[in-house]
Image (cartoon, rainbow, N blue to C red; front, side, top):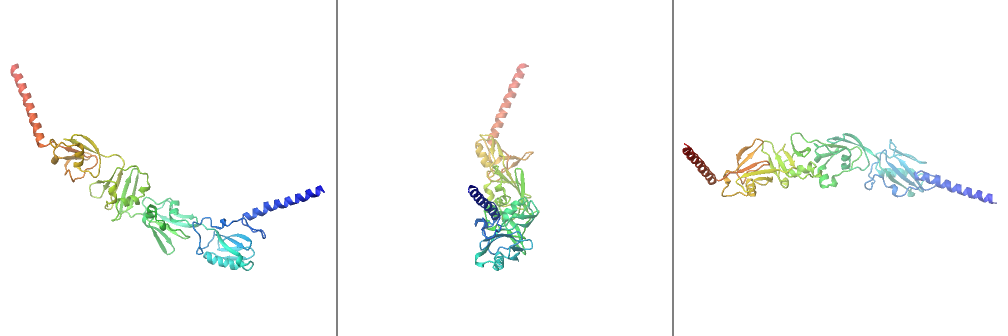
Length: 392
């Protein structure tokens, strides 16, 4: 009797083990096991790569996966390279190139021959990957496999970002016979996410180069780039277009503007929003401290930090000119690697970094010094004459 009971218990344990080991393992992969149910939950029916809900206008193609519920059975099927799907015990149907809504109707028409249509449904399980061709001023030119529902900004980052000489204001997405023009700079700097289009199968992305000759060059410490010229752009616009606002801020002190056939001029960072330049201008950003030197008839001789908005009168005032001994109308500036003296208007003429401002003495002070010198000289001569006469 005991042996018979032990035998029954062993049979029950074997049956339970076989159900837990084989039934669940098969169902966890989405296979059909007779009339059983699948462990695939409702959450797994959402496409893995979907950024948003995929509507009925989605076009199916090779690589898409569909989940089917046929009464109490779950099937996971793939769209084959020829565009067809095969459904067990029902046959095959071609869904390639058709919208999800059209494919859904075709599949339900096919399975309704064996199953009750009202108890069947079709759901996208995983979206296909596809190829996008990238050309122009990008890091990696050629065809690239992208995940479904990849946006333009993600794709451009994945292919090495635009080159330094790329015209990112007119990135072109060629879709069939249409071309979508995207201002990639405005999108990335101003957060214009509506322009961040979602790529589709067959798209071609072209990033044009900046036209040679019509550009503005920006020079930063250890980095140099160019931006396409446009007459209505300010220096701040060129700064943003160059992506400098995403670079490390090294603490720029001043900006030097070198326009063709003109002397360099210096502006402050605040002036960039209102300053426009000519084509082929060079803009250099300085990090090191710049100085102007003041000497002559001032109370405090020495160097002063360069300020692009200051003129000679501002530096002289900072040095504390003595109006009795100093002269405004004879101020000179020594400039250049081999300094030459130039006369300036103290109130209007620009002062450049490294200039030496000389404030000469007034005519009265100069005459007084000359008189004292002559008096001293005559005193020395007379003393020498007296000594000579006495010696003789």
